[in-house]
Image (cartoon, rainbow, N blue to C red; front, top):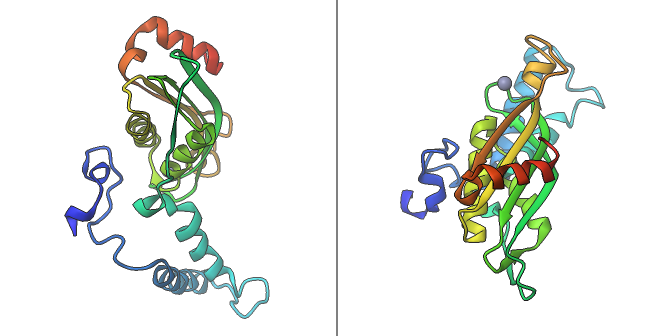
Length: 213
Ligand code: ZN
């Protein structure tokens, strides 16, 4: 099965998924996860006969497969269409404050924040909402923020056909905020710069537009 997995999933920065990860269909996954989640609720002592609780295992399983972790499946990768850039805009484009909802892979609790992405056009342009969709696709996996940042950058470079890409993420980790050390005021910033964004002047221009410097 390995050779049917797109190259993106074989690289070092990829989410560690098994080669057989998508042999099972979504409906079977939902059924199995619901059974296991029901078991967790049972062990916690919850009464599954209660009206409010009885559908929770199925709801959680569906949410995991179809929403929270839908970005694991390469079949859900957004279609990217590029347009010819007739007005010769060959400068920087920045989309800031893209909503990031992800999940910490160590605790399975939310990572919530904003992504700022920038690129320098090669003459082709991307539909702006596609930038949001690419961020969302990478975020909808069990993640660590560092890898999420690198994955978004790699996917943007692939989609845009340029190395001139910048990604900054500023996010709150609920494993830090809602448990453990319980710090609700800290956030974590990660960045990946490639191509011309390695130049400090260009990088500073990007950070100024994104409003993070
Ligand atoms: Zn965590």
